[in-house]
Image (cartoon, rainbow, N blue to C red; front, side):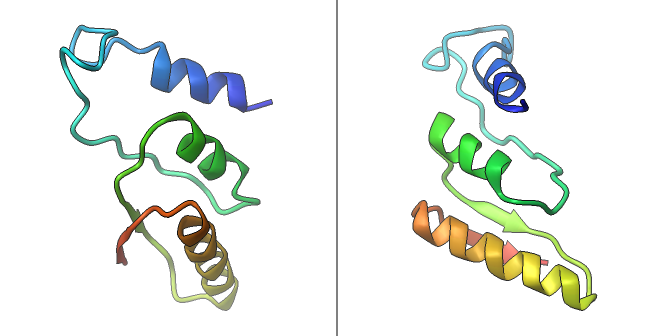
Length: 85
């Protein structure tokens, strides 16, 4: 199960030396995630406030299908899509 790993990385990491995000907020967090069911993305959106996403894709048709699914998931979670590359 990937969920405990995500929670540990986001909530248990001392970003800039502090566990208290009010002291040292994280400006950017870039995650490289392979295409899939969207479970990981959904868990991240439910764990922390995501203020925007950039979706990176390739020209293959199967990749376009994944991008459409990702767009729909972000719309449902009310997360702005900043760019599609």
